[in-house]
Image (cartoon, rainbow, N blue to C red; front, side):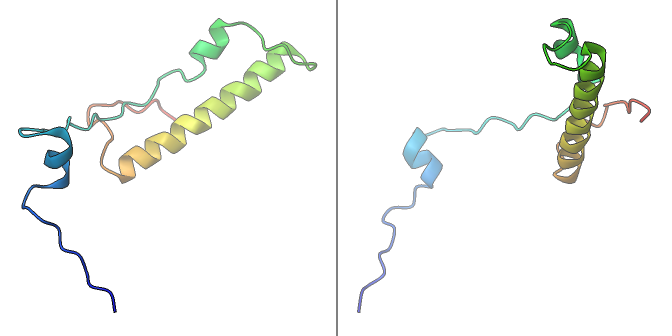
Amino acid sequence: MSRRRRRSGGRPAAEAFWGQGYEPAPIPTVRPATDPAAVARSLGDPPLAIDGATASHTLAVVYEEAVRAATALAAATGLLDDEAEPDGH
């Protein structure tokens, strides 16, 4: 029969690793992007076989859905910035 090992010492794991006086950084809040496709649009039409405008529009829809999902996750975990203004969608 094996014996359970006890942790020796009373130092918390973070203090033991980082040293005395360690303070974790505050968790930043999330502010949803107002124009999720701005960076991709600044690069021009994507080099795809279909019409560039159609591809840009489709990618913009994907970026907007990603922002919605990230915003929902941030709201569910309490990380959504309280001063964030909804974009009307």
